Image (cartoon, rainbow, N blue to C red):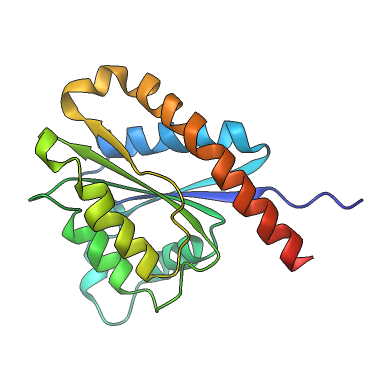
Length: 180
């Protein structure tokens, strides 16, 4: 029996600030999910480092590489802080560069960090549909981390990962069966 290659788990961070809490939480979420999936190759695409190139028609090589990395993901954790009740413009600008169906090979896991509990629906109402529009499978509830619970984020994200990882694993196994 041939062992399939490890799944590619990519973390896409849509916070415009480098070294943000959003990035730290997204990486924590990806580690929690990845630990439950078996062997995975992990990569992080932090849009704060690519923001300058997003406005140009001719994308810099680093931006093109980030687009390919995101499109080639098997599992894609997409994280953003809430900004005016939804995801950041930086994340939207990046995702708008991708062609329709670009995320068809990915199981996407939306994650949002928010300062106000009233923004909790944003992960399901705004971010999930955006990822689905790009063709991603979004089978699980998104993760929400309120800023006032960041100290408990490890527990919150571990519980979330325990809930979503079986669904992600099932989709990955089904895809492996249909492609072999």
